Length: 569
Image 1 (cartoon, helix red, strand yellow):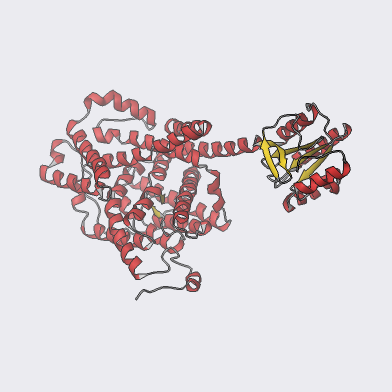
Image 2 (cartoon, rainbow, N blue to C red; image 1 turned 90 degrees about the horizontal axis):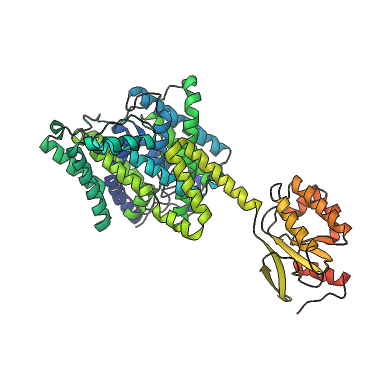
């Protein structure tokens, strides 16, 4: 007999919304999916530490308390919140130069960044800022993640080849690798190549098998049996076993000033990437989603990361896809993963000391190249050349300027793209075939719905940036028309608001046309738009008799005042 928790009880319980209601059959599937996710995720989490610059064991820590915290406080049933390559790269770029990678001080700084990120996420929840994720468009997100993939893949080449690299910048690192390529350590390269080959081949022929885990186990076994370290192949060495010790990062206010921009970049990446991922899976599975509650879950997960000795965590698209592929359908799968990781930390950290560093670098390399969204870029190129250019600029900025600056540029480009679309929206002239059949044609003077009547459709709100474009086209429809125009009707079906600057432009246009004997009218005036017209005194300027709820009423009023006008019925 299945055990269900009613919807009423579910809403009463403040915690574990992503687990409820619990059904026995689904719970068994989730438990098995959690074991599969752990098999895929453990080596990947170890690889993320090479990106973040933290000790290997901290990757396993991201699969403990952060998973529990998000399961307790979040709403998404599918989103996996753990280590992620994008935020790991932001962290490493930001902390570069502040402390040596893998050092105790570096790890302390990473914990403080996670705590600051948690604070920003909590503030976003308190102010209900879940909508912020909408300001990072999918176009620039494709470019940003592709740029991160390129940057990360360059960053691990030195570990796969065992060549020295002195630069912190991706292009400098690439140049160093190319310059030192003749000095590459061939046994190290052979190990990395074998790991990459195993992962890619299994992904192709047996995608449900944990290719990364198989490659890691094989590399550990070969290293232990063949004594790789004696042959110059670097291994990670002893890994601290046991569960993490809980402690709150020390709040050094002088450091907070330096770390807050890093936390801000992580915050933006987390909000955008997690929201896009959780929304996609909720839509696919017809589930409700509370974006603001997910912000609380993300804040709790990062606070848990800070207190358990690891680095910032994020909603991961790849790991979330692993859960769905494995058959998981709730956060119970993630809790099952957490239990497996606990067993690894308690019983199996000994063999990890034989893991070649080049094998970890190879795992990261395969993760990074999958982030380069060639399919998404090709789709953009085919469907929207301008947005493709935007994505390429974002990717290039990440590679050239770094992840932290790239995310800021991504937001700026998203907002500019939004402004561009609002600044010059689609416009049309409305023409009638029959009484109830209207069609839109490109804006051109001389096209009249009825003799003397021009209907102009504007496809966005009127604000300070779009007002000039609106007025230029409206004037052209009157001034350049070969036939006399009596009324210029603005179909305001897409206009939901008018700001102060646009109101002034509308008033000037009204007065200018009135001097030429042309009346200006508005049709399809919504209640929200009418409130703006009243507030900005435009109702008085136009006259209430020139504001219409329906275009049909507007045409009828025009005919009543111009009896000679008519159109085919």
